[in-house]
Image (cartoon, rainbow, N blue to C red; front, side, top):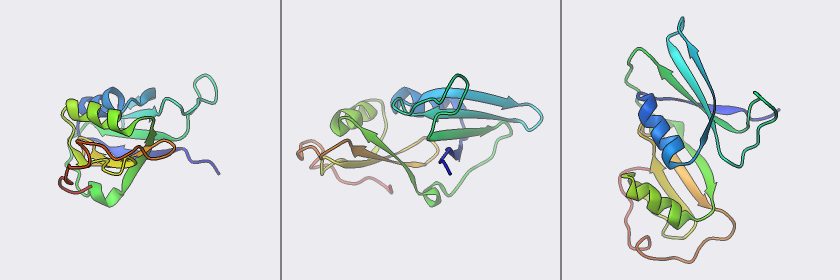
Amino acid sequence: MRYLHTMIRVADLDAALKFYVGLLGLREDRRMENEQGRFTLVFLSAPQDTLTGPGMRASPQIELTYNWDKEIYTGGRNFGHLAYEVDDIYAFCQRLKDNGVTINRPPRDGNMAFVKSPDGISIELLQKGEPKAPAEPWVSMANVETW
């Protein structure tokens, strides 16, 4: 058995790609449009995830599912969360914050933070290796909303 992907329904594909690709730094590996089913699938992976060959799947992946007919999705918190390891949690969170992303659970401990996608999916960010020393402004920041 091999883990392949997690599917997330998104209400606005452009906003989702701006977040996942533009801000989180994932790469788009492939895209499928199904006119009969009226949906688009976009498969994303982290830069260090390896492709198994030309046109093959990278693993693990996120599958963004965009249904062309508008729907309202609720229960994003019921999904749980996605988790990514980052080289520098402080720099990564600062870049997200500078681009208007709310840091729901700041990295006060130098190890873990939570943010949310435009569709309310919780994303856990974990410091690669040992936690960084606690530092401002993160130490003094309070949690915001749910995470």
